[in-house]
Length: 249
Image (cartoon, rainbow, N blue to C red):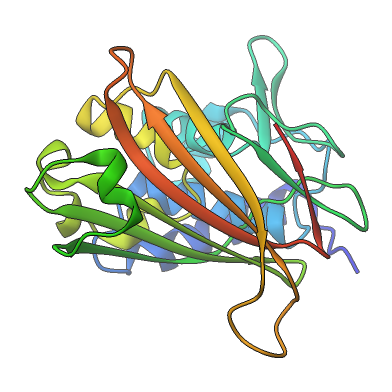
């Protein structure tokens, strides 16, 4: 059942959620606002098509600056869960609509046809010295940084791992994982490290589930991302259950 609430109650709840997130180590105000609003969308307090309060009102009631709210909303737009338009305000994305910011492909729930996104997921960032499938694409001998994310939505598990050359992302491995929750990694890499992605090549296969009793065969999506000079930026592998998902490019 979708929980409904009036605007005053919702903003009171959001303010409390922001304070809760700010108690997490390394959580910035923009991340606290992003996570609070994203969770409200995920659990149905903010329903599809609903308008969010004006940005100035959100900033006042959440106890943050207008700029903080604007950055948080931009990040949510980049994962495709809200739509912002000048003169029309901000509203929760409806139905099958999903923003062009969610790149390179989109996953949909096979049963409902609705786009998948994840209000909560586990993130792990680590230095990697060994080589694997990613090394042939990225090259280099300076080591790598791996970002792993385990995502679950509507009972559908998706696992993603991204590899980058360590020298291109100085300090990333020390980043608090809360800063990458409910984030589109691509614009984060561009804004933080100047790594712009122009295009990506994909290899899609169906592979057996690694463990018996799992969700059956998996889509395995390998993405090779290049910058404007055709230099490799990142190697990414994503797996999702074939029986539960469809893909759109």
